[in-house]
Every structure is written in structure tokens, then in C-alpha cells.
Image 1 (cartoon, rainbow, N blue to C red):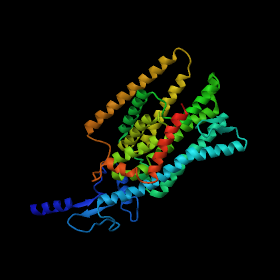
Image 2: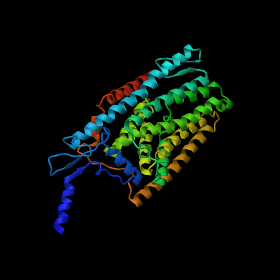
Image 3: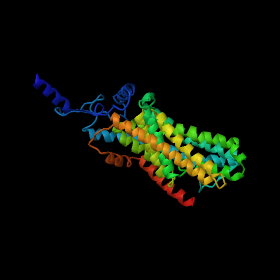
Image 4: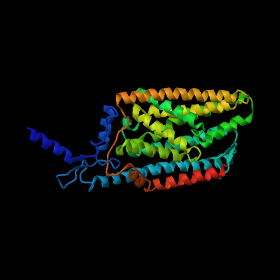
Length: 393
């Protein structure tokens, strides 16, 4: 009897299945079932699906003989995934840097009071025209690549968008960490350069408070803080994040955070955007729902917007009000984060899934950034960021 058990355990040890080897413990059963089913689907070019029995000379998976080794299979899937991610990101920067300027040029020809300089991201014209143009361009640059990846990867809805709150205290931990980051940096980098220009535009029209009550300003504020936060997080933490989870949560967190940071094309804002993106990704995984990542970005933008409002006060009380606001946010964040870590230690949970491969995360990322057109987009973002930093001095 004992010898049979030893033989069975030895047989199990000799069998490699990259799908079953993945750690599914951090998510709920429905999510895990649908994720496994998607990965085992036949003719799925984006699934890392490989199995091997070391005692046999034939490699088998649900789709038949596809690779000589797990490493070969992993690299093959990475090429497929990052090819389409690269195309999606190329759509984003094309709309952001080229189509947006073309639309403004067309509007200007049609007599609309809006125009810009091709060597700068600054938009000139009427307040209504500026807000409408930025809203249209923002929606196009996020929704087009989002729909593209959704149609290509064909993930189940429950896998593409995590929606089950498995750990509500993780939401508190993510928001608390965000408040600490906000206070530590005190840099309004959660907004894109366009956002800051719009707020600056409204602030400089007049000095009276009535400017802040304009319909255009209110509409843009709601759009930027709520709508943009929702759709952008569904893009970065949606289909793209889900397919990258196959190679471990750390790889998915770091990769999507780097992509989020580079697409901002804002050198000054990049460090803070990276930190916020890391927190939102981890918070989503630890809590089990994309609502956490959305909440993180909304809290960050609301914090910076509050600072913007406070700093419009020209009275002597402004520094005291601003500092008090930051101190209160820091205290709340510190208490919340401490509570979260105590909970994590007591429950002995880590919140993320791991996958051990012959390829390390660093080597996997280095291999991925060489895949075209993903490599070209990264280079374009770096160059664009540098050029904008020089022109906006």
C-alpha cells in the first residue's frame, strides 16, 4: 500500500501542466473555473497551455503537440499577446498625438473656435470647445484599443473584469496607501497634461469664484475624475491584465503599470503614476474586484483636485488649510494601512498568485519589450515624453 502511494506521488511529480501549476487561491471558484476553461480552449493563440510527462518523449496538451518545451510554448504565446497589445497601444498614441491634432485642424477650418500648435499639446479657444474636444479625444484613445483587445483575446466577462469582492479590507488598504502616496508626493501628476491645462485655463479666466461654477468646468471635472478613471482602469486592468496573469501576478502588475506610466507621456508625472498603478493593480487582486483599482484612481484624482481648489485661495490662510488637509489625509492613510497589514499578517494572506517558470520575470519582460510593435510603442512613448518635457519648459 505504501509503495503504491509513493509511485503515485512520483508519477504526479513527473507530470507538468502549466495551467494546473498556476496558483488560483486568491480568487473565487467561478473566476478560476472560467479562467482555466479559457486557457484550455482549443485554438486559443493567447493561452499559455502546455503539459508534459517527463517519463514520455511526447509533449501533450489539450491542443496536441505544439512545442518542444514549456519555455518555447511560453515565448510563442508572449509573441502573440504582445503583438496585439502593441497594436492597441499604437492606437492609443496615434489618437492622442496625431488624430487629435487633425480633429482640431478640421474643427478650426469649419469655423469652430479651437486650435493648437503642432509642437505643443496646449489647446487654445473657447472653454466649451476645449472641453468637448478633450472629452472626445480621451474617449476615442481609450475605448478604441479597449474594444480591440476585448475582441481579440475573447476572455469571459468575469475573467476580463474582476467583479467579486473577496476581501473588502483590501479596498481600505489600497485607498489608504493611495492617500499616503498623495501626501508624500504632493504633485498633481494623476492628471494628464491636458487636464492640468484645462484647470489652469479656468483658473486664469478671472479671479472670482463664479468661474469655478461654470457648466464646462463642472462637466470636465466629473468626466476626468469619474469617467476617465473608470474606462482607463477597465483598459489597463481588464483584458490586458487578465492574459498577462498566466505568467504570474507580479509580471502582470509590473507590465501593466509600466504601460500605464509610459502612455502618460509625462516625465514629471511618471514616478507617481507608476506608484498609483502598482497600488491599483495589487488592490484589485487582493480584493478580487476591478472596483478597487477604479476607487484608487478616483481617490488620487480627487485628492489632487482638492489641492487645486485649495491653492486658488489667495488669502494668508491657504498654506494652513492645505497643510492641514495633507496631514489629515496622511493620518487616515496611515491608520488604514496599519489596520490592513495587521489583518494580512493574522490571516496569513498575500493577495497575489505566483507562477514559477524557467523564465524569470525580468527575462520574460526583457523578451516581451523586444516584440514588435510593442517595442516601437515603448520607444515612441519615451521619445514623445522627452520632447514634451523640452517643449513645455
